Length: 291
Image 1: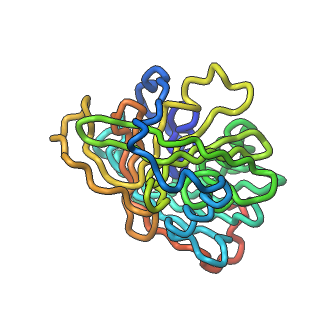
Image 2 (image 1 turned 135 degrees about the vertical axis):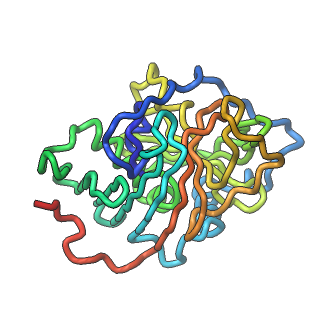
């Protein structure tokens, strides 16, 4: 994913590099556990066992996820004009090799190609050719593509990743959506972190959000600002759409699913139609930069 927006949103859109006028996130708020009566039988599991349950419940292949191919259509971007509000993108993720390629179009026109491997990070645009991707931007792209969603659930099982069951949590409780589930936190060796909200009965992935990196205590965007919800919801309290209640159940992020990007107050930032392939064959020269 790769939307050109504040902080963590910079790496979440798979759309082009043009800046969008999005509001800053609401002030960070704590999310206390729900009442003791609303517990989950999965809380008794170890963190590693809960991750295994979540992987199976969310549709990850039994043999493991090696390659992920994602095509995304993003609409409703805050601050975008009607003619530019529809964005098309494609991502190739090689989890074993820690490589990714992000291609973005505006209509039928190629906008950008970003290729990241362990040894390099490059951006190609038809106007500017090939330039390096700044280090911070590359780190954000790696986290939001390799550590979120199904890719994150898979890579969280790698050696060196610290897992913690964080108990039952309520991330949202608005007129359009209540997001309540069992939280699993993963921290990678580079200190990047992701929180996964799981169905308290099945372990299926409902939503996730980036966690704070060590030393980022003052980062207002990297913790509470953005929620990736694997389902569809209306525009929220400050939107113009009629609220839908009850909200539909979250979908497992798989072929033909809907993904919604939300601020922590429930305000909708964008909706994404996602077509996903798990473990397809990698085309030749996938991680080569256009010239």
